Length: 221
Image (cartoon, rainbow, N blue to C red; front, side, top):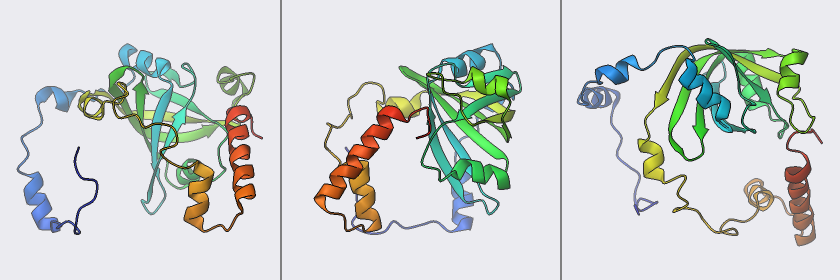
């Protein structure tokens, strides 16, 4: 396995050197150049309908980016037509990074994954919000509908090859780490922000996080 830490900071290319270096890559193959069909055909639509997770990329008006995972039971990501899809906004930590970014900059990109399948589906376009009751009701889980949905006008759509997921062995479990390798998320964030909580307070926070994971996946607590 490669070393995770270098003994020194890496040397960086200048802008001119980087442009020259990128120019040394082989030309894109005709099939790879043509595979962006710009619409959700039956293959992409079925993949997205079966997918339980996607990663959503947005940026604010200054171009500062954010990527967030969105997970749900299959069928929650809705292909409305060849050029439109929608996904629900489920309960979270209320930072609202994605939603606030989209208020400033509607550009959005998504990568959909299907467990056990090493290919992924990539979609990009522009987003708007919807509180349409019929749409939200179709996204309900355990009787809990989202407060809103993000509706994407699709500009780019294509399948991505399996190399990244094959290299990562994502579905084989080979790189899976045993439970307890990391402290709980509440303890790690507490360390990062410098809280001075007692052990009793840390345990109470852990219990609150676990309760939220158990009871707050689809209902806002």
